Length: 87
Image 1 (cartoon, helix red, strand yellow):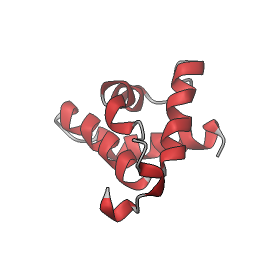
Image 2 (cartoon, one colour):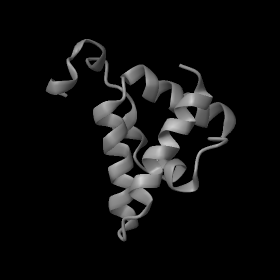
Image 3 (cartoon, rainbow, N blue to C red):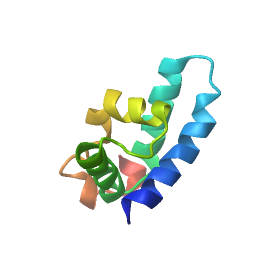
Image 4 (cartoon, rainbow, N blue to C red):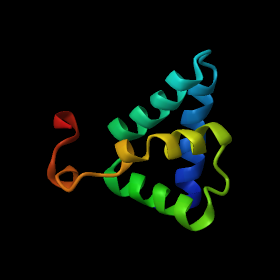
């Protein structure tokens, strides 16, 4: 999937969590959502976009969430073969 589409999708997720009064909880919520519902390849592509383009197009709250919780979002080697319900 192209980075631009992933950026748009991530920003929509960020819009939802941005209304939370606790910014730390919002950042973690964004990262947890991406971890739970995005395929590891999608997360990897979005992180590569941050590395290559500085996260161009990402809303500030989404970029902060991705940078703060990067370790949570980087797929473990076992993710590719593990059903999402078991992660």
